[in-house]
Length: 295
Image (tube, rainbow, N blue to C red; front, side):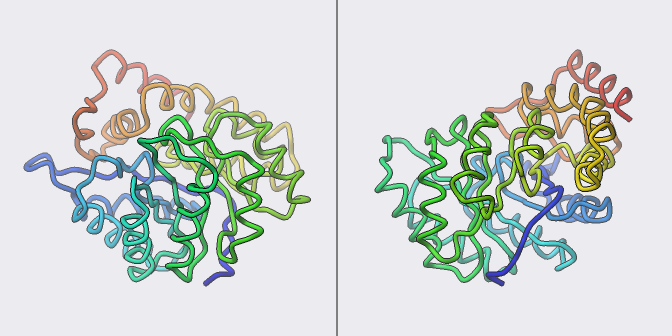
């Protein structure tokens, strides 16, 4: 499926944990994925930062990947996040995701020692060579410790056959303009910074990767539909209506705030895994008010 094309709202589910033993609750995860698909999201991307992939043991990661892809059931593309300090482990997880039925793997390089461009390029190339499905480059310097330049990302897309798209989450919309410029508008790129959603679409983003779809799917979809229709007033109205929620969940940490929001909606997904802590009562009340105002 090297021709897989993503567009629209790419929803990022949390990874639910059982209240009884703290393990991954695959039934609850499948229900959340189904909820996102039924809401109309255009793709589902488990095991990103929102999915607490950094806090999962290997077997838990495999369980979550398999359960998520099975729950998607081919109804929309499934994009599985791959993030690991070692290339060997990243390759192993990417191969597992492909066998499980993922349509795309989204690769975030992690760093303890600072990596240079040669090392980053080798990491991406090794993962891409190991699978036959498209690879999305994920740039998120705040969590990975590595900042990928637009020039490097475009170079990788041009040189490696199945590296075909980019998720840009640096929070700098000028990076997106640069991606469009360097690729003459041919490179599909996706916004991963929630408060930049409107500006990102104006810069040419093909889609918006967002955990907000877990809480306010109608508004995220409304924004995308307005953008596609070229209705700027409607797009602005949809964006600014949800902006306080977007700012809150980003500032408070996506796993923590999204799980609190889901609980408020009657869909408990367990607490985030330590060292993360649940949202306190005061901020949970603030989130409830913001969600009520947005809806």
